[in-house]
Length: 267
Image (cartoon, rainbow, N blue to C red; front, side):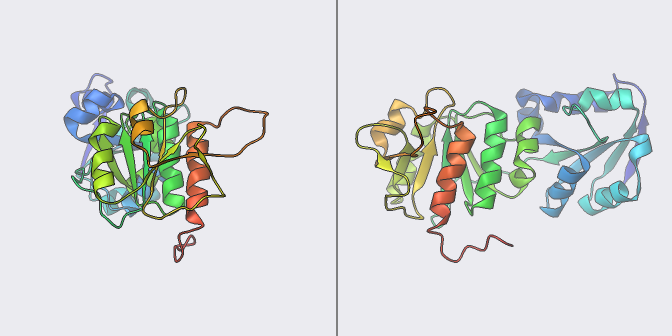
């Protein structure tokens, strides 16, 4: 490992990492930020490639040193608190940050994968929470059609490390992926309320289904509604009209998990 002590907020290495706070910078560099000792540990345990570590100088203790060594990182930047603040997206940072290489997106979805789709979900916190729920309930792949960047700092933090371990399929819109899913024999199940909607808990669910939850304010698009095999509603009291997108997705995943015979939720 190479070590650099940096005290200037205008240092080029720091400027390059700061650019990763924006999607344009992440897309250009093919890298993103994992911040906090716990999340950095999750990235390492998942086998992520770490190109650089940024650590407030007095935080470089044995546990951080071990993480850096285990990650195979080539550079460790030892910085001041003021320099660290330029690259941090955390309100209460613990002073440890890894720059992680984005994996290559797979062109095809495994035919045997359990799949969940989000469409036009724009809150990165919701996106990260759904990825976390997917990992908890045995969904292998999360499709993100026109959604917030799953590798933004807020999404990574909300996923609690699940973003490192879950297959993500990112596309511009549902039109790009639904025909492929239907051609492979999957049913598209849209979370939506209409006169023909099935009721969650009283309907047949298949592990090959692709449930879809839509935008926070508008739900799924007309395209998804017109191409869905079924619509599904979540029964609830009259005290509220709808659930938060991440909450709705989690409820759907939990119900689907009941049919997933053989899935080990302890390991």
